[in-house]
Length: 78
Image 1: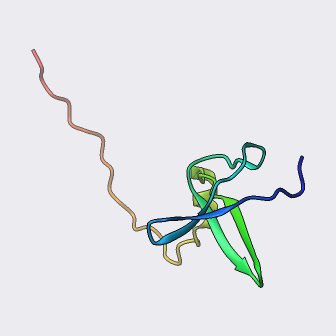
Image 2: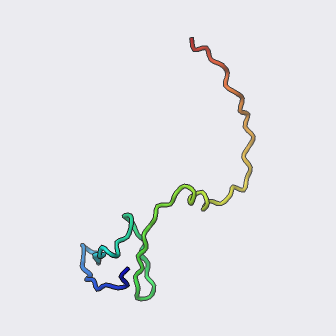
């Protein structure tokens, strides 16, 4: 895997842009960009699955109320 590559910056409307060479291509179509001093760090934004979402939730502080769940009454269909 390449460690560094010379690239050119350009303008795209009011934004500064960079073409990412194929060997540095990121998966997906979204990324997180952050600055650390003079460095720009680009990280792919991975889609979170349901398990990750549920694990991020805080447990409820209250109990669920009791619900009368009577079986349905039989219906006459014929």
